[in-house]
Image 1 (cartoon, one colour):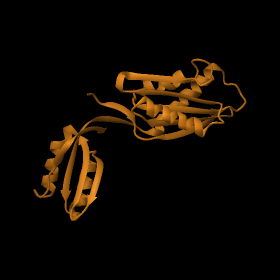
Image 2 (cartoon, rainbow, N blue to C red; image 1 turned 135 degrees about the vertical axis):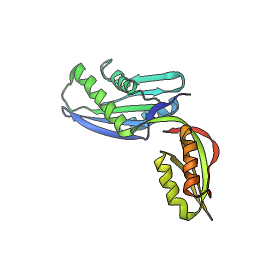
Image 3 (cartoon, rainbow, N blue to C red; image 1 turned 120 degrees about the horizontal axis):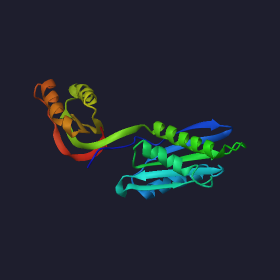
Image 4 (cartoon, rainbow, N blue to C red; image 1 turned 90 degrees about the vertical axis):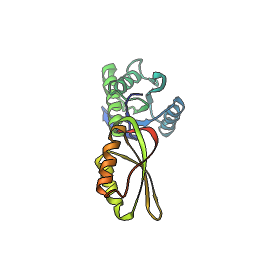
Length: 206
């Protein structure tokens, strides 16, 4: 399975255009149910807003959905979706809420505003690349723990879990292509005292 781009976290940003307030929301989602739940959450939060426009794209089966939510056809949902597609992100849902400020923006103005709302939402969510990673664990002494975390940072590893007992048991994911070099560095730094144990694999940030 190939690498893909998505957003790292749920987030939001906003701007004012001719007295209309636009709030762009984004959330990583895996299913249509998760996307719909997120949309309904935003709609409930902004029940008094004029429009809650949305679009989402899912990796599985390449599902794409959007809604203008009362705005003129083609001026809202499609621009939000277009920004998602041009950013090449998947498993993502964007909702752009509009509080009408009394000034009509026209079709072109609406397209630009909803496109911008989608763009700032994606930026706030931090676009990342996901790839197939090895999930590994390593048990080290407390005296070596700080050196291990520094090593993991150097290799761009994602910390999954840390268990503090008589020693520190760390589990993390890292790009498959980096495992061998990471293990060599660990063995070298610890003078052969510590090494990595492979647990499995998962898609994670690379």
